[in-house]
Length: 321
Image 1: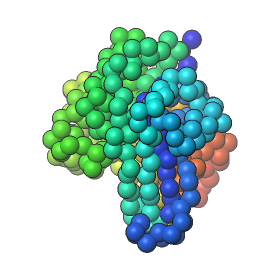
Image 2 (image 1 turned 60 degrees about the horizontal axis):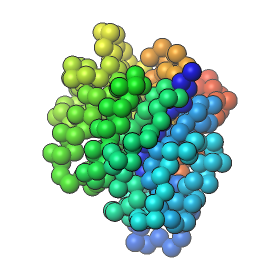
Image 3 (image 1 turned 180 degrees about the vertical axis):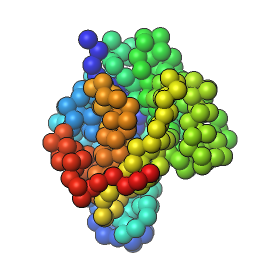
Image 4 (image 1 turned 90 degrees about the vertical axis):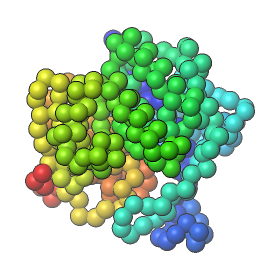
């Protein structure tokens, strides 16, 4: 019986500034592991789901640390590819008191950026219920874009559902047009598409969530969930159903990074449990809100008990959309 979720992407070493301020003034950092797909894998395992990871890691301490942590968390690493030719990427993240943190990448030419269709020849989808991808992997290189398309094709042939979070990172793409064209093409191949409303403006030139969702349904997605920040989310499916789900309230936002990944973990886990779409989106909104209160990219992702406590706490009552 297919049961796991296959995550494909680039986990990296993460140095989080210990004090607020610009990165150039930071004197000390706390080390962690980052990566959008890795965050989703962590979120899923903490909710009791099985996750497997496909990536490429180098022969360095970052790669070894990532493998060690995945094993400790319970993420299946049997499809991780090791190479001695490239190193594992890493990044710096500033600490802020408001707004988004400053991010600086050391990932150009990384091991994961060499992922190609040739690396996917032996990919195992036999125990896979869903493949989760983001727009970060195809941004890394031409071979990664080809690998993303190849894997989506394999999943479709195997009857495995595909969820896709565009996770736009303009600094990683060669140019804006390539980013827009590629992301929209991948969205059309997905079963579940998870854009943010600001990303819809970049990709389609609209901040109308209903128009954006209708467009992606017309081009091929079966379920589109547009994240609306504190307002919650709007969803629309190929069956003609749609609706709004309000967001949850938190009084202090510590760090915005990872909130979208928490949202994805919530939606995917709930759908795998055969929850209704509104219930799945509600869980996504809750985990996204929880993650806003944590400094790390994935440390705040909740176990099931903590999630239920948060969702049932009147202090976090959803705000009207």
